[in-house]
Amino acid sequence: MSRFTKAERKKAKLRLALAGVSGCGKTYSALRIATGMGGNIAVIDTENDSSSLYASEFDFSSISLSDHSPEAYIKAIKDATQEGFDIVIVDSLSHVWTFCKAEIDKVAEKTFKGNSWAAWSKVTPRYDALIQCLIQSDVHIITTMRAKTETAQVEVNGRKKVVKLGMKTEMRDGIEYEFTTVIDIDHETNGAAVSKDRTHVFKGRDHLVLDEGIGEALMTWLMDGVEEVFVTPEQLNTLNNMFATITDERARAKIQREQPDLSRVLSKNYESVADRLTKVIDWQAMQAQPSQTVNNNQQAA
Image 1 (cartoon, rainbow, N blue to C red):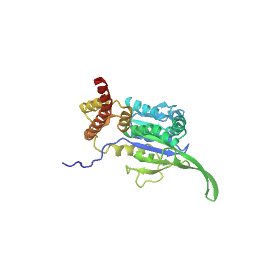
Image 2: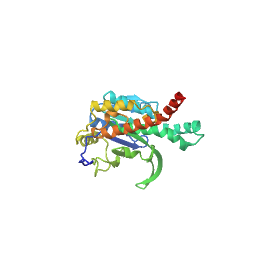
Image 3: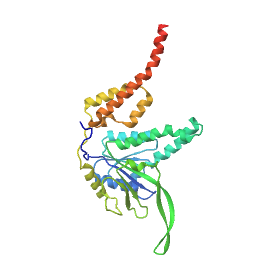
Image 4: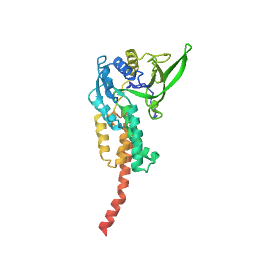
């Protein structure tokens, strides 16, 4: 029997990143796109509740997040999902990267005698847990990301002009791989250019205007596929019971990073996930055997 099945495009949840320098219109564009998609919108606002400036133009709910730790982001995303929101705008994701870099310095000084490379072993899993939450969340995710600002003097129609340039995104290298689409917004024109797109919605389109029509087009593409089938309640109960027997903290943490929500395991992946948990349970049992042997010897003596 073949292990391969015919590929089908599934209905999907949006993973969109809007990047640009301060003042280029990331928040406003995110709200326009989300409005065009339809549904209830939640904004996780890490910028002193700046999204409220647009409350008279768009219908959305928000939470002001002063704690920029990965755990705070994860909780806010999960809370929004549980409260029934359809679209979550994370504005901005860059603050968590700033937090992680500062955390590296603290951990390095406290635990690793100033060795920042070693400190990443403590902070990276926390950052990765947030990325997994973004990827596996059951809602549409739109994030904004800051770009480092640099000015340059250019000549326009024979006259010199100082303009802002969006340079490197203020995030960990490779973040663009986690998104369906990445759009860079120009500060001068508020127009946009697509730097990554798996939807083909933007094929052949230059100088985009990020309005509600973009949201409508994305939603049409996202819904043009077959429904994903997740584990049954009985299968979920089995997975939860298996996970509950795992007491090793490091093993539990690794499983939760890889599969933060067991209810979102695809039906076709049930056997492989169950097999993974079984192997961890067997490994845990093997770790316990030496101490049990010592205890038996002591009792015999």
